[in-house]
Image (cartoon, rainbow, N blue to C red; front, side, top):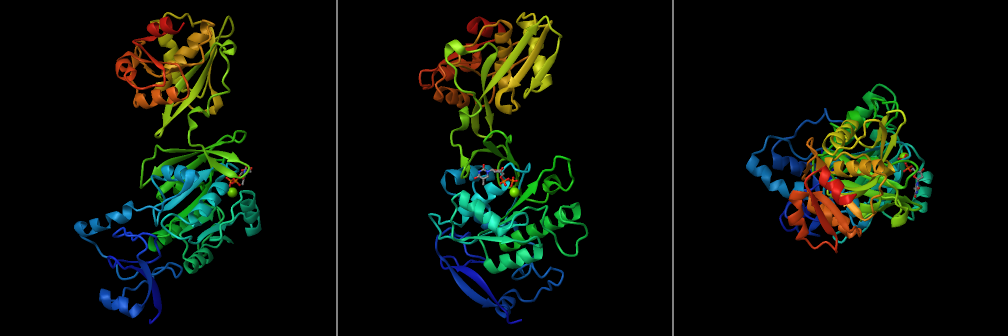
Length: 480
Ligand code: TYD
Ligand code: MG
């Protein structure tokens, strides 16, 4: 009783908030929030009675007033608040923001999963530094990076290597959730980062850190805290190779957003994929490159999966380029095929779904008359990418034809199209965008389903010509 509580009140609309924001989340005006100290008595008078919150753990900040059902029509006034995101600036920020669905939502909980060593700590340290910096709309604000894995000296060294010198970035090494949340309440940061969920524990919960009960309870506690304070929390979770059930997968239904950082250890590209997002689409993909100074955004990733361009005389048979989409972005990928006659009849597919590949091979035999039956056939997608779209069918088929006929395909042709059981080429979604991507990278010809030829030919395509084909027979006659 009589304890005073700090809140921020908008001078324009009068709405009050538990923490400082650059924009008023209610009316949207910027720089209008001013700090007020209100005593408990006053707020109790306003709501009429005191709610007993004994059940709530001490480290959770107390909610002002009581919670009760609200009219839908009243709730809608808060729509602004739901749309409001903490913007992320710069190229790197834009890449992260897109995967998050437009920015970091206040009070949201984001889980970032990935294999050990893929770069999760690096990514989140960069995000933390970026959040703490000055934005167009707001002065720097504290951001707390808590690590249960590394000492603050280790994190400091890493930050030095990455040339991060943000003054408002606070580091803390702890594994005790209660301790962490107490520190957070004192600091009132713009965001909290916890590295990692497998190293923290909550007193009174059975099991060791990383065990299922601990991981679940800690996540729930953090989620509760995020919702109460509106402070967004980003947690790291390891995916264990052994299929450990305490991995992040069991947490996916608790948190708001689940991101996975993926990448092969020996390559420098890292993909940030959203697999769950309560605030946006889940088919967005962020592309980064691991460098000496941390992760760098790759703003135009179309060509990252292509091997070095070969001159026409060097082109090998069995190679075809497909244009695929992941999220809102296009990628060009290379499909390699190897047909070997007179050897054991074997089929091995790497990066291509085997049922799809079998279907394409059967169609080539039946509908295009290729005598593939006593050939060993190998398929490979360059750079370890997985072809999940049927839009890559045509490139797979053409690569097989090219190897079988020992006829190299000039390296300036791209292939887009799905193949039906009759050998016919079918339209695929967002073909315009794909064609544009190929044109931008200097491809001179693009083979597409016939029905798309006319509308696409009308486009401005940097001198790239569109070749429409009805079926595989026509493709073979056109290309070979
Ligand atoms: P890290 O973020 O520690 O991975 P995780 O937290 O997912 O286990 O980063 C792992 C690798 O990244 C490490 O092998 C070194 C490399 N790295 C760079 O290449 N450049 C950098 O600037 C940093 C910080 C790390
Ligand atoms: Mg780490």
